[in-house]
Amino acid sequence: MHGCVVAGIGTGVGKTVVAAIVAEKWRADYWKPVQAGELHASDTMKARQLAPEAVQFHAEAYRLNSAISPHAAAELDGVQIERTKLALPVTENRLVVELAGGLFVPLAPGLRNIDLLSEWKLPVLLVANYYLGSINHTLLSIEALQTRDIPLLGLVFNGNPLKSSRQAILEESGLPCLLDMARADRIDASWVAKQAESLQL
Image (cartoon, rainbow, N blue to C red; front, top):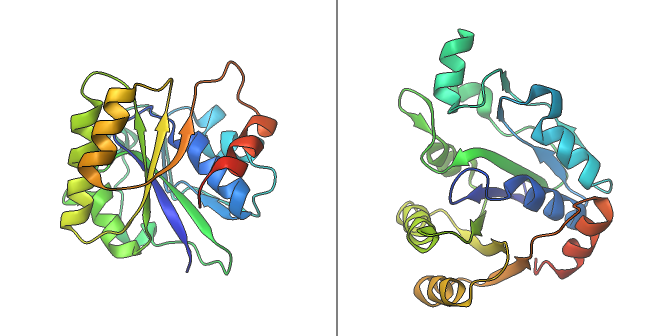
């Protein structure tokens, strides 16, 4: 199995768009194991529109109705998220996996996103955004992954650049920046294809 996991330093930092960019560049498969809320416009649906060159979009293992933490959304739906149902889908192609939320988001008692990363054994591409506190959140995420010996491919910065934050994160972490993804008025398949050309993977 080859591919990567697209993780974020928090929620709403641009994981879906980045996952689509990677899937487009690699002509890979895409999988989001858990979708919480927005079932009418899921991240899988968005990625399918943005990455027409991706080969296959695997069905979510869990589709939960509420746009809240997966463990709470599952409880509201009367569902128990099970580790065994979150095994990677079988494919001979590269696989891009998009997490639901940040690394320590709980899925079920005793099960967090970061626990799955240790089992999947795929390298992580970490998406960072620019906001007050993002340096801390990014470096904490990196340390959590490194402490567990989970390999990191590098960073994608999403948003209008803030030089001081970008420089601090790169210097402190020693990781490469794989893409600077500036905000766009319109994000579509053409824009994603251009980003894929710039992605250093």
